[in-house]
Length: 202
Image (cartoon, rainbow, N blue to C red; front, side, top):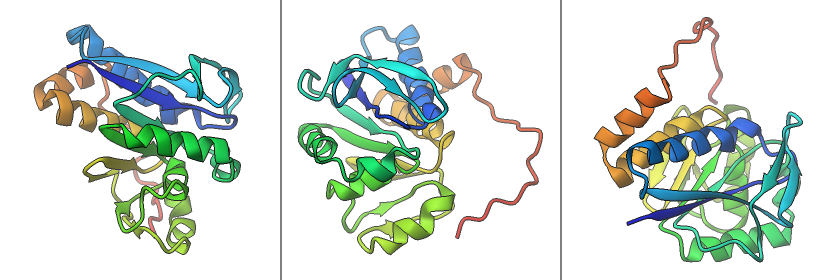
């Protein structure tokens, strides 16, 4: 079954939050051309300026976007205003209603929370926003986990963790062997030069 994957973008969205998963999902098609269609969607369609200045042309607006089997919400500074954007929240709620999976990267989890999709569920976000996430009082916050699977809802920690989550989703939906081939294809074997830097998780 070919799945449609919609990546929601907005001004000041963190680039790697959605570009990383985009790379994983689109690379999947090298091995299975019928696995998925991937598209971007923003409130008005057209140009979106992301957190670090990258400009992206969204494929669809909220009104024109096709139904998606998988929805992904990135994080970034833009989420601090987008959680108060009723058009975004309404779109996420509407898109989630018919989706197989609803996912977030980094502080995109705050958008899912505002849409009422995380109430009583375990979820995670960027390590620097864990206390702010707990303060909402609606989520069982999971610290120190790269991603958290709650069935229809999958959240990931910050930025690069979205790549891990996307590979996990490929394995969950299309099988671990195909996920391994994608991982090798994009050569995702992290080996950073500064691995001894402590990262606070609480």
